[in-house]
Length: 598
Image (cartoon, rainbow, N blue to C red; front, side):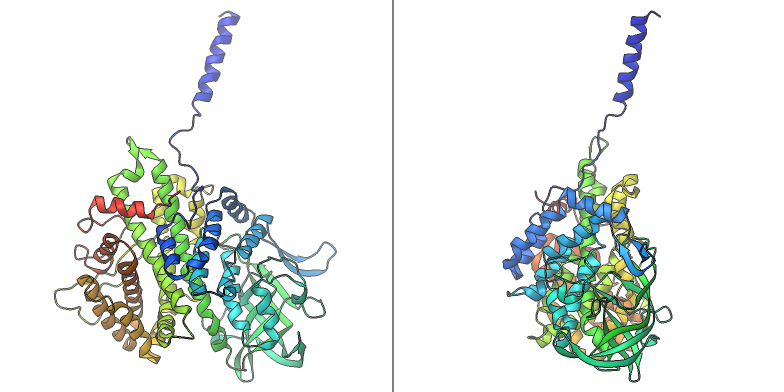
């Protein structure tokens, strides 16, 4: 072969090599839309309850759909926190280093009032508005959702103690300040919680950490009682926080304390980080084991009433986890909708394939129901001090929503008790359905193998999904709390039932379900074995009521038909099994409602 011919052959070979790398039929990133303005459910909710917050929500919604902000989340989860027990000179520092992306995300969250709006807004329904912000932020990055949620709840814990007034002011500030200064010198503060111990888990009565009275002194203009703490905490969230709520035993029993990381004289408190937990998800956020050894803390509330004191603001963290899990589910749905719309198979987009439409519509129903359940609890929280009925509603609906939304998010499929498992027969001729799939696993499957790759944000959502179900009380703990509330005060159950029976006659299937829910709840008061089934029924009843009120008729009807009524006489085990209960044309419209409108 002569030289010119050989050169031509090489050029053809080179050209062919590059042509094999042409990228086609790949989805784009799920960015470029406003997660608030484009969401029909959220915009309607804010218009109903807190129209004054619409611009704030739109500003944060733009960040949730921003490519740079989503990449910050990727970086923060790729470059995980590092424990630094000592500095390079050998001094003990007990600190954690975060990637700059994490701090940038924290600054964005604080700047957009994700942690504080409920306490600073002089307008109606501030907790509802703040819940929408948290729902949006959990579509960005979940590791920073922990400190924003802790700060939100902690404000309530500071309110009654004059010595902690300065902390209430600083925790509501919007200029994120990662410095390690004393509270008076900081622009804002981050708050953590350190309650769980390895021998007790969720049973806080088993707290072994001890406290001894040290002295009374003036602390930022008010009298404060200082104690020395000694013990070990198995889980400490956000170990770089400026202060922590914790529990320890004194003579009168388990007592609540607040522990500043930096003391009034500027020295660092005796707060020793033992190790960071190597978690399967929530990688950007540090969780740790800590040791107290002569650690100074201020007593909060009365001696011996620490669990009650902690629970006085724990209901806010539980609400935030219910909101956050709903936001995570929305993010998974957004990712699935984007991928299936952009990706084609067999000559048409995946999102137009009949079975995929069934799957997407089924997920869209579940996400809207989860969102409205969380926002309904937030609405009740806004009226704790003004309405006994709403206070009773919130008392039971908060653990209901925390249990249900956080248990719906994990990527494992599980089945709920059938009616036949309950030791009381359903109404004659009615066989209830308690089944249903877990959520993000289905969203991941919509991506195929691409969803299981770490470069895809779906993988991070998949790993994140189970966390909220075990954080701040497991599913069983929430169901126990629901049962405790009903047994102690029947008005809690009556408040939920009254909220549902306002709609009597709107849907006969819903009416039958509410009646069955009352039976289950009353049975659960006598038999703990039934508590999970009753709690799920309460969650579905509230969801059904909110969908009938505020969603489209066909979506509400599909919810009742697929969640509250028999499905072929058995439990539906997977998404996309709405055969016989919904038409494809109706499913198409439900999917369109769920899309983020540019």
